[in-house]
Image (cartoon, rainbow, N blue to C red; front, top):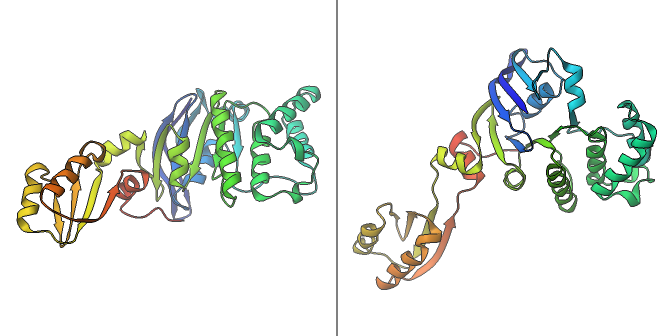
Length: 306
C-alpha cells in the first residue's frame, strides 16, 4: 500500500530525516515510534504531500507522490498534531465545511457526517460550538474531518497528545474500528503503550534514522533482549549460588540478590522450588518482562524522551 525508499529531508544544516526506507501493507496499523524531534512528523508530512523530500521516493497505492500528488491526496486522510478546527463553528458546521472542500455531494455528505459522529461518539454534541469542547473531543472531531472522503490510508500524527485518559482510550477505539473497516493507518507516537496496543508493525525512529522495524516479536528477536528474574534474599552463600548455576548458567550474583535470564512463565516455579530446597528465604522477587521500552533502550541506548 505504501513504499518509502531512501527518503531524506534537511532543514539547512539539520538532517531531519536521513535515508529511511520501509513498506506498509494494506489494512495494517503501522507505528512510527520515537521521541519528539526524531523525524516522525517530517516523515508523515512528506508522505502526505505537505513537504517535498530532498531525496527518495514515496509510492501511495502504486502512485509516485511527486508525479501524481493529486491522485495521492484523494487516497489519504491526515490527522495533524495541531487541532485544525474553527472554534466559532459547531462540530457539525466544521465537518460540513471540510466535507464541502472534498466536494462530497450534499446529501451524501450529511449521511457521512451522521455516521462518523456516531463512530466517534459525539452525535449528541454535534450542535455545540467547538470552543466548548474538551481537548479530547476536539481531537475526535479532527479525526472525523480527516475521514469524510473515505480515504484508503489515514495518517495520524501524535493524535493523543494533551488529552485525558478517557478521551485517549476513545481514540484508541476509533483507530481499532477504522482498521476493522479496512483502513490502513500510519500512527506516530512517543508512547510505548499506544504502539503495543494498536500497531501490527513498528519502525523505531531516532535522530532522523530508522534503527529497527518489524513486529514486536521480530524486534525482540533482533534486539536479543531477554526476560530476567531478580530475586533478593536475606542471605545467600557462594555454594547456594553455585547450585543455582548448575541449572541456570545465566545466574549473576549482586551481594544478596541474583538475576537469572530465563522464560519466567516456564521456569519461575522451578527457581522457587530450588530456592526452597536450599533454604533460601526470598525477600523480594521482580519479573522483568520484555516490552517495547526495553527493546527501544537496546536499539538506541537511551530512554524514550518527551
